[in-house]
Image: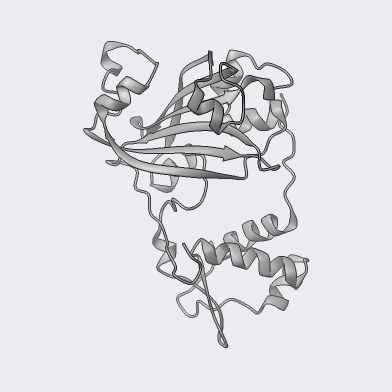
Length: 256
């Protein structure tokens, strides 16, 4: 299946182009960015669009705007491998941590929504959900396990099992449901390997029983929203912190 073009607004495109420009910038001599009007001219967008993109990059900590002096690349923020404040697909998280990612679909089946998940996804109790469990490897070592619940009713055409094996959950929502995940709300806690195993449905082979093979696991629980601010996916991600390090830039000025 040919993947559809994901439409993005000008501010998002400007932000991505600016981020790429910053990543390739030689800041050894100066970390100051050109003025807004020059950036707008080079990006062929309005200053309003540039200002919106710069605001997003400031919240992420990638730039610093100093009144009366200009906009500067935050040298310290460039050292952050994976910003927990920015959404990223799991393979990208592994890649940013310096490893080669691989993915394995552990299971994909339908189940009824319990009361808690139904409430979060704004659906009726016992509504049909896809439950998808995946393993992500860092240089062939288990690094992340994800569990996702997606309402079946979202899909205009029910995907085949092979499609879940070959595509990320975000890609499946885009291809089959016309949904683009825009943001999510995340809860973070540390759990034991035993608790994680009890929460997973995947039984696996005996050699897979440890799965992440670590005692303490970082668990991120998230509810994600689409372009209409409607919840479309609920999930849990279990991180092996031996390999995956998550960081967060916080600023008193931006409220982060």
